[in-house]
Length: 488
Image 1 (cartoon, helix red, strand yellow):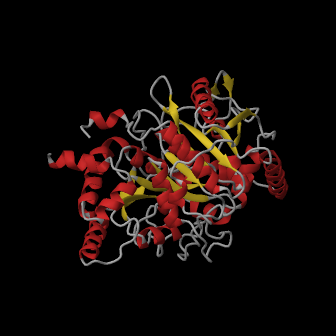
Image 2: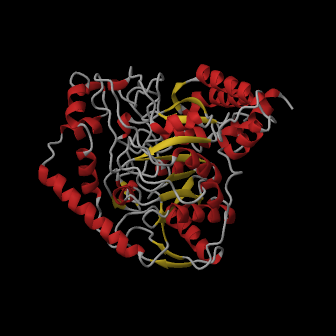
Image 3: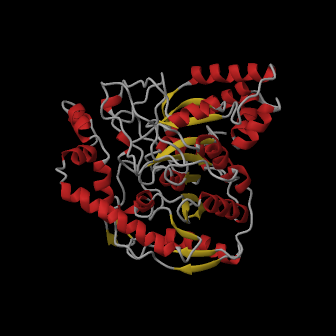
């Protein structure tokens, strides 16, 4: 076997297998890291998944792990496994530009909580993955980096805002990556790239406590909307990452106690027989691409015909909460800080972000949004009393061309260019666990995601359903044609 073919074989291994083989010394951490860096070098000219590669840091970390293993030290559960970190997630000493000219020189002085935990578990950070400006978009282009492309078709978007994380994992550069999800940004690129992406219950994975650098006052999270979570090719890999990054932290006042189950145990496919499942194809109001309806409808039927569930078509019965969602985003944005920072840079910034900052939000819009969220949560609670799980498409459309914010016509209906995100952001408003798994492919060979939603705090149920569907409809051996074209 040649060195290049050996590296390609390593890059197709899942994180669970890599971690086991590195611990047993079948593979070395530096060998795995070099395979990831070689894959990055081969795919970056086409994908632009990484805005800040970190090859020197990765090699230094890998060699240190190999020394610890040779010395018989107790290494962490992710020792030697490569990971990409979304560029909205702070990394001490490693540039975190957030896709914005306002932050192009920002180097945080401390790690995000999840980065602390990944490092402590032995993961090897190979770089920061590309994002749209400040994450205020569901696609993958920004003013300061080349546009991230979808490995399944380079003319199309991988989705966002965790765009580079999705492209990296789909191309096998890293077996998993960190994404953040304020309105769907773990699930969106996971669906468009044919991956697993999980937004655990609000507070299950703690958020970054903040930035101490006074030059960057605009750094903040959407505290009551945002989640951080794994993006991976397999359900077990998502569970492995969650076993490391989940759990309370006093720096996040909304963090909740550790789960009362083992993430990896739940990710082993078990029976769903007898589960009551609702399937909403369109929330009762949304325009949905016919191919998405077909693929996700077939996936939903599999829960009945193959997994033994009782599946019923049903909609929760709320009106589109889109305006309320964006008012909540504005409430949790440091508008004063960002407006001050944007002075003199507006010509460099994304037009949609400038328009967002220029809007004169009112107190009534904010209080109406709070009231709307309360009503949405109450409606969802009542709806879920009759069901164990709720299934929907993850997105209303398959991947679409880069350099747009979304299609303006879906299934013959004129829609706002953000309407394709209609299935994801309501679950950020309710805080429920929600995951996307590959449902299948369009006739053009593009991935489509199935969203699996659980009751409040039922992360176990969502992960169990993901594993059961993966076992029934396996996808792990299907790779983007780009890799064959590149000899990978």
